Image 1 (cartoon, rainbow, N blue to C red):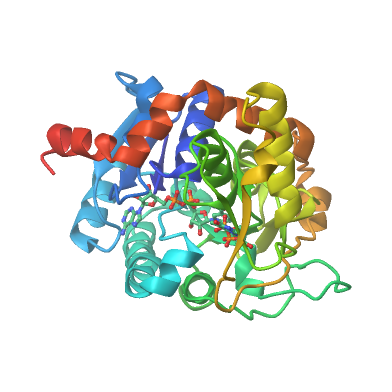
Image 2: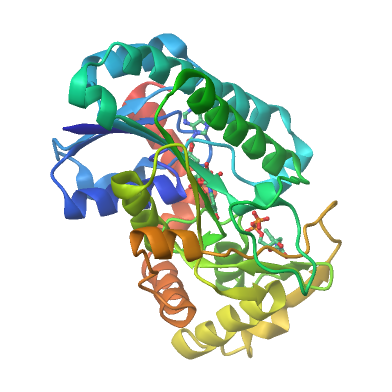
Length: 352
Ligand code: NAD
Ligand code: TYD
């Protein structure tokens, strides 16, 4: 048996592939375009492991996706590939429309053609699992209940609008064509291999370099943080037992204001790698707010808990400590990501 993962060289996708192969011998075919966010070093521990088949390619390339499906005949597609950074979507929304909307459309069409010719059990057990975000629901007020799956879609950034569009496409391909889809909408992830353009890894690497810690606006925006391997276990639970056509929210009931996250990271670094120049919090610097910045996200994760028995394994305290320790233990990963050296390696290895 085989699954096809898209975007498996990115932050969550690479954690998912590593986790999957820790718990199963089922082959993973990993289709990833290796944009700036894709990093094969994340998967180095799988070098020479026949259960991992890496394919460099674009989800917008229908011929390539068709060929992969025909060759590997996966029982499921788990679709992570996306442009994922809100700030980049503000500066250049085009890439988000292309990969997140057009790419998902292309993948759905290829999956539909492939699934249509399957027979019997292979057809009824096939799944297209779409990995999405809580940001599609928009922004909550302080007293609002957390996002349930029934919350209206109110995306506010080019990123969240592109993900909302992709969610709608997935829904429509189920309702119109019967494609057996599953969608998960997860809150903010953190953990190993997180590209240091996002809040938590950026704060860790900047603090260690003695650089300012840029907090947007008043820092009182709230996100609901989940350790990445808990997101992966949630996806596995939905893939295995989720009801076809349903969406499941995944979150850890862990709302925190950005400024508190930054203070927690600073305090952990003070403990684990004290700086003779003084506490890392001295580097906190409030900067201009992000345009259209969503004030609060929070996930109501009761559906996945009640239906599938899923619970996160990490608390925020255990997860953030592991994360900070991982960055302290992997300075070479950070340095190579920042220098772009890993991309040179990929060019060398894959001929650009
Ligand atoms: P990421 O930016 O770290 O990784 C994205 C991966 O997709 C990269 O490896 C990149 O090379 C690949 N990719 C981009 N465009 C591609 C294309 N056209 N064809 C093939 N591959 C392409 O993203 P992430 O944080 O790992 O997020 C993965 C998924 O999870 C996304 O769909 C995102 O919307 C969703 N999500 C992320 C979070 C989060 O906190 N990071 C939370 C909820 C949901
Ligand atoms: P981010 O990690 O970019 O995730 P998202 O925007 O998808 O939630 O940002 C998390 C929060 O941290 C968000 O409210 C924006 C804020 N933020 C900062 O305050 N400073 C920064 O340098 C970054 C990257 C984010």
